[in-house]
Amino acid sequence: MPFNVRDEHLPSKQLMFGDMLSRQPTNEIISNTEDEVTVHVNAVLQSKPMSDRKLAEIQSETEQVDELQQVTELTLNGWPQHSSDVPA
Image (tube, one colour):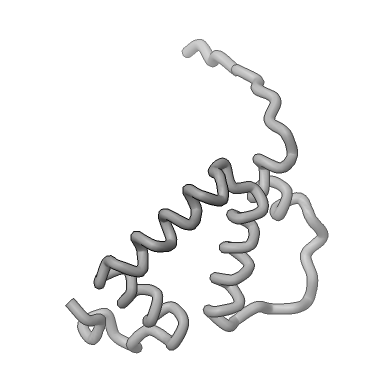
């Protein structure tokens, strides 16, 4: 079975997950969901492939969608212990 390898160079700022995987692990364990979300959001914002105007538009639209507001609230304040208790 032939295998075709294709290499493509990406600037390091586009390799946030690869960069995170290549770093020396620390003994610190982040167990707070809010901290995990903050780390992820900051990583995305640092490598965002969009303008500040587009990001503001996405944030504004997110604030107007009830389901996304509910997910944001649950993420910040904690999810129920059982999936059956997640609001519909």
